[in-house]
Length: 355
Figure 1 (cartoon, rainbow, N blue to C red):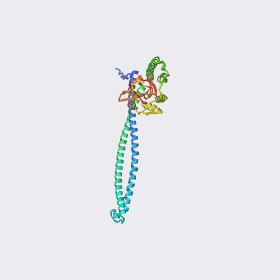
Figure 2 (figure 1 turned 45 degrees about the horizontal axis):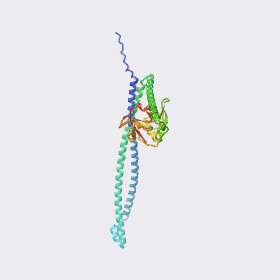
Figure 3 (figure 1 turned 30 degrees about the vertical axis):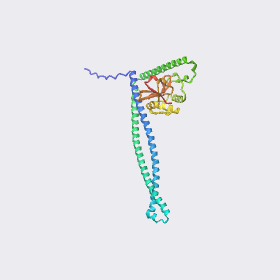
Figure 4 (figure 1 turned 120 degrees about the horizontal axis):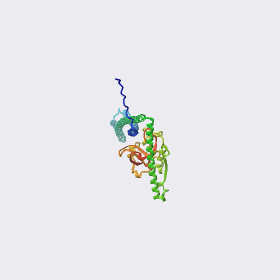
């Protein structure tokens, strides 16, 4: 009898759709880690500013306390110099009654000043001790936030590494097929947005031909991040136009974890930087931007507004800038670049207007 060694069966190769699902899950986990990291870093920066402010207050308090101690030293020295004669006896030895009265008042003021200065010094010491404790508490919280941010960065790196390992497990032909499938989906969504925008513009033009040259009917040409797709979108004005112009100038720059530019961006880093270029300060994280800005409905959305994805009214992990015509410019995910996509390719939570 010949014994033939058994051959272990290899795990079945996942289909393209299965890989896409796994990748999407990993990238969503990475987005959650990035959002949490940004929140921790934002809290860390604010705490650092508070600690710096407390330290400045403590320096001023210390300087004031030193002045008080110097004043007390002067009073003590004066008392020491006249200690050989009792103040009451000094008063009795005065021949002139007016001198006696003047000296009595002076002695009273010195005693009163000494008492007030001692009280002031005690209060300053108490204030300084309270500020020192507040600074120590803030520093402890700052250390905790720093460690939390580091943990979130580690989680992000882990999720991205898993996604990359999954891609590396595919054969070159399979990876090409996956990328081609994603490209087809994006192109189809952009074309659908283009058609819908053109149809809406045509309907508006036919119903209001006499006002077609108004500012609300003006349009601009937007070139997508991939291919030569050109979509006509409503033109923005003022600060929104400046924000959009900045965002478009960043097309092709890489997605970088926790980055706010200029070399690369994460999603909320891009929208924050774009509106900063327009002179408007907005919060750092996607969730804070959603909760801190004026909400608008999808039907009322205008170019420059922010669009929030993946989450609910209390939390989101992705944000992009609306360009009009169903398009958004955003920093999508690790391994990608700032690009233009159809809003419909992601689950929309809400819209908000920075200015």
